[in-house]
Length: 180
Image (cartoon, rainbow, N blue to C red; front, side, top):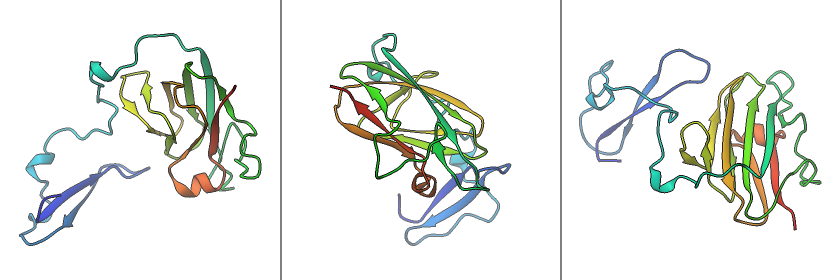
């Protein structure tokens, strides 16, 4: 962030339009109120239009294993979960997503809720099926389905969870578990 004022643009959840703010990091004059900085005259993207460079794409290969991860719950009951189950810290491997070393794993995330969920996978990066972008976190919008693949190349028990901490704490977590 440069010295002075830095614009911040956000897409608010469940609302039309964008939110705009300024970060003050030193001396300088802020831009006039209501005027967007010239650097923001173009199209704002949430990342869905970004394409991965060919050098980071996975080699084409059919998946060895496919998992469906349905995001469930509601604000009313605050009963967040994956595949209808709330994660239990006392039994973390109950309902685990199994995989084996060197498999190509495809994950289909179906958001059955009315909220956005930034879903994060520890221990791996994945490639989005629709555009090849490499990530470890993907936003899954309400009633949206996202498909990604990763190579099972880091043995262990790896947490996956919603990055809205209050959703994870109430049960929207799971584990990818390597089988021997």
